[in-house]
Length: 88
Image 1 (cartoon, rainbow, N blue to C red):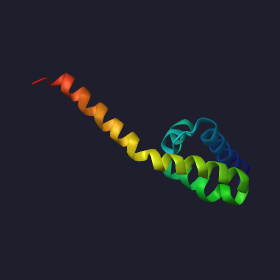
Image 2 (image 1 turned 180 degrees about the vertical axis):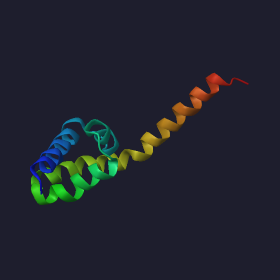
Image 3 (image 1 turned 180 degrees about the horizontal axis):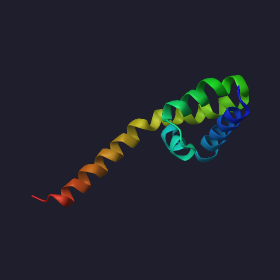
Image 4 (image 1 turned 30 degrees about the horizontal axis):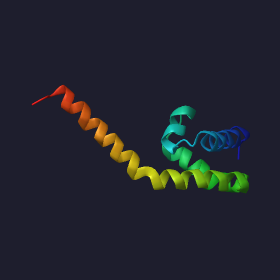
């Protein structure tokens, strides 16, 4: 694996651990797709640093468990804004 790739993977992992960011948020920061970040931290990182991989996995598992809550909040916010624009 190229050194630049390894560095990016480790940087992504550290960012996710430090901030608790989602894969989507990390992808925006690093300028890559969310699929790339997911592959980096769930497959490639395991081969590079197993301890770091386990720490990232905890954050990703937590984010997955909370996903339904985030989605509900986003929908609530969307419809609240729609009501303001189109009052009946």
